[in-house]
Image 1 (spheres, one colour):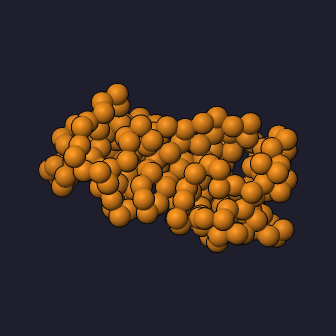
Image 2 (spheres, helix red, strand yellow):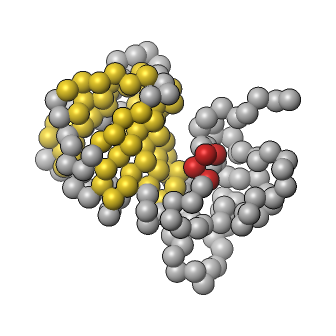
Length: 182
């Protein structure tokens, strides 16, 4: 019996052979990365092979290009795992010696699950060490940042809930890369 896939690996995930998943076509899945997040976040969206853009008459579906997209940043990178009306989920990697801006959000709270490394999380000027397997809550309007004092990347899953998940819902107070005030 092979071990289960490592959390957040980038290779395609194939579900155990227990028959087809309800509402999911029978094929290899493109980069779900966190199989536990294949649950319902208040919306439905069929898993579709990369490069396909199915036509749907269901106007509750978001564009499929959002999940699986991401960005490199000076501190590391993020990949969007799910983006729906009730939640947005990202895998965030912070490189050794780097930290994100000290920031807050007006329209969302965040729940972080550290999956690799030890994150130093600052909440309203108080540092908290969060090891792999640990979690931390970041309520709306809470100033926060994460830094990596280690020698290997810190990886965490960010689950955003609230009324808006855009990258422009960020108030920056301090930033190592000249973005404060934006």
